[in-house]
Amino acid sequence: MQTSPHGIELHDDPILLRAWREDDAAAVYLACQDPEMQRWLPDLPRPYTNDDARAFVSGALGLGRYQFAVCEHGTVVGSIGLRSGKHETGHIGYWCAPDARGRGITTRALRRICRYALDELHLERLELITDSANVASHRVAMKVGFQREGVKRSHLRHPDGQRRDSVLFSLLPGELR
Image (cartoon, rainbow, N blue to C red; front, side, top):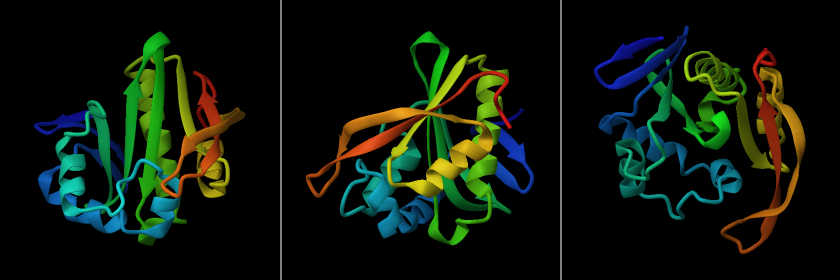
């Protein structure tokens, strides 16, 4: 682990997880226009505005201290965040910009943040929840070692008014691949 004046930095060349900066808002805004992101992230504001992007990168949404820009060769290509909860359990969320998908970037970022959560923060359980139909996100989780625990029926209401199922995945110490 290395730190910078802006916070924690986690490296896995060529991937860097670093604190968000104001000048990242344009990349976040652009990524959040993607219909696939809007499909899988029901809490994403619609329409997604520049003000929403600025609130996200500034930390105004209150997501906690472990929110990272995922950068490849210095370019923001995604987001990954960790919230620490009760019972030494961490909750992880992520997204990847459309032009960076399919290259293993999210898998590497997830593996790196899990290593940090388990080794440095001494968390004893990590969880992530995905839409039941988001097969790409399921694959990312399983490549890192997450185990599918079950379906949370009618878990989240989406902007179209429909409630959809979510899948709960977990990772315990010793399971990281």
